[in-house]
Image (cartoon, rainbow, N blue to C red; front, side):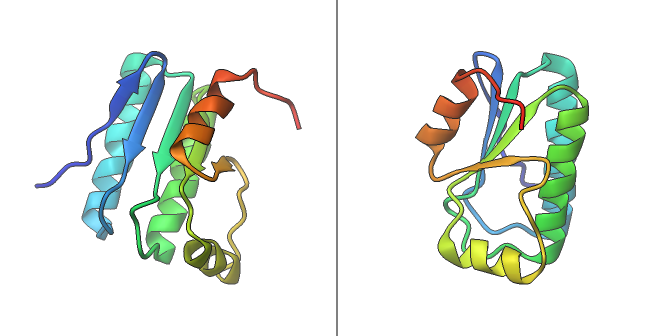
Length: 120
């Protein structure tokens, strides 16, 4: 079975998704992220979706739940590289960025995680 790599950069985890996902791969990715958070106690998690063309409801919901679970484990989550088409689709499906932050690109996400977190 294919797996999406989870990279560690200092105290951050980076997941760069380079293809559209199917449900089994989404479940495996969520499980892998949570295991890595438990093992390595990361301060931040970046989900880079810049290469994704489509984001269905199941995958979007899984990303939101992953971000919420990461938050409960003390990890700040940023989704980077959201295209206008995906942003429009998520808005039409009623999703908000509740529980995670967004960044235009990977560089912006890494910069945001290197800065102190602001309480909203």
